[in-house]
Length: 349
Image (cartoon, rainbow, N blue to C red; front, side, top):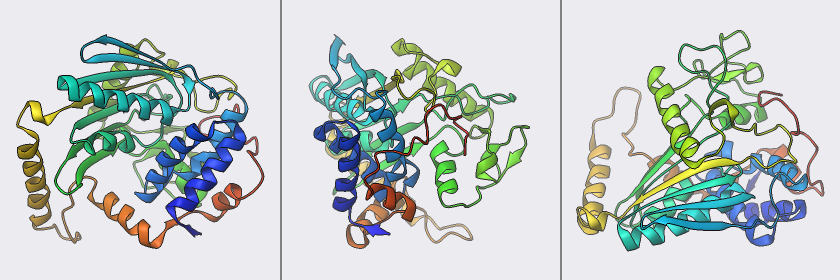
């Protein structure tokens, strides 16, 4: 089923508001989910709505959170999200980081006590749209084996980065520190398709291509990915005084409770360094240089990070967004949720 971005946003807002979120907060969550679907990150798009709706309806997401923003220095701050919707806390936290970076050249804003915030690319793009460089990273619940281990300890612990170029084009990286994000497994399950070799292991620690047999994810590049996911956990967990490592709350265990997650935004104003015009010119040159590189056998072109996602987003303006039929049927139904997630294993079918 293909829908326009506006239609998809309206469906999501209606469902989340019916679950208990304010219209304003539901709108922000919907913006982030539509952003993900439009850019081809379906693992973080509309397929997440029913999970969010169930947690909202059961009280695990605060309906009217009491946000508290505390500056701890000229360039640092803590944003307490009161376990509100993660997308809302992360967006508002980035709004504050942008203001601080414009004033002081750099900003580091830690958000604590928030729910799952979705595609981090949305938040770093907020900054890039204001001619700023941004990094965002957040912790997630244990789903990945550390290098050499047989039991999960860290989450997918994603990192996102954005740098503004010219004419509204940005370099954007949004990646899990596992070979693939858990949402990719969910996406494969929703489409009943196998996953690639090397993404995950089963309950015996053996590689599996069956998304329904996944028991843990694998870190990218072995020990390197393991080190990165540790770094993310230190900066978005330990640094912010929230649960860390295998103590991070499960996405699905007890949807009546807030998740108390941590996320960190780092924002830099290029004007304080190379100067914004020179910076954007060089980023644009980098984009062109990469596109001009001779492609390897089997590739049609070298793309700069985020280019194909931006192309998909532009195409979605004309062709709409493809939504899996059963997700569309849920979104257009009167059902708030089907009690499908509470107290389930993160690896449950």
